[in-house]
Length: 270
Ligand SMILES: [Zn+2]
Image: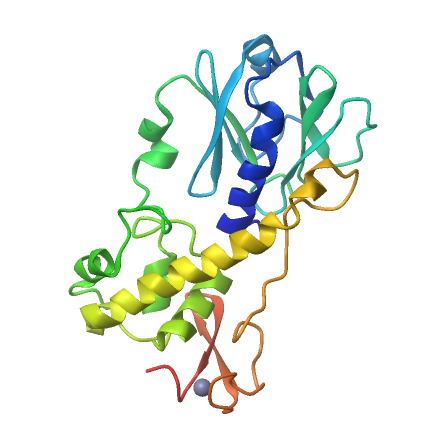
């Protein structure tokens, strides 16, 4: 599933190609996405300029003359910049064409979203109640601590809750908790502010490293195949059940929290 770093990489990857460009054509080959793509979308978008490409949580926002186009990659979506004559393949559902190039959405599982919004995007119900960006100024250990008071939910679920903070997926939550030395099952309300400061730093650093690694694959946005900007980060605990902890050597354990696999070291994480 595309996580925040992939979406950020996608945002940075497509922005230079579409910013300042006028949409000449929109081709929708499949309307049935998580929400149906409205049949009037091509008519609405054609002729509009793209002023900026931004990201909020895992949503991409293309700012245009009369509103915003919201894109979400769902479980399996990817966006590429292609020559507009490139023949579509089976799961290439939408092309947004700018003269010679097109922004092409591929999404085999069709959980993605393509939505036109005329209200300010941050007021839309999908975005209105989201917590702060983990890489933004509103996110800190002090903030997490304040939100955690009297919360008995496991810390891993707490940081994966998008009302608390957006974009901390399963893998990144496991890795950040390892770096911060916090056991994923610990109750959120039973962690000191000092430890939350470490955790907030760990969340920032795992995401930041992933984005920087993604940056090295930006040229893939112009390639014919392959998923853009997706990258394998060096993972210290995730998926490493039974392997030695990179810090102390004891075997990594796995536990299921909220139906998601979590990995941790019983010695290093308390
Ligand atoms: Zn350890």
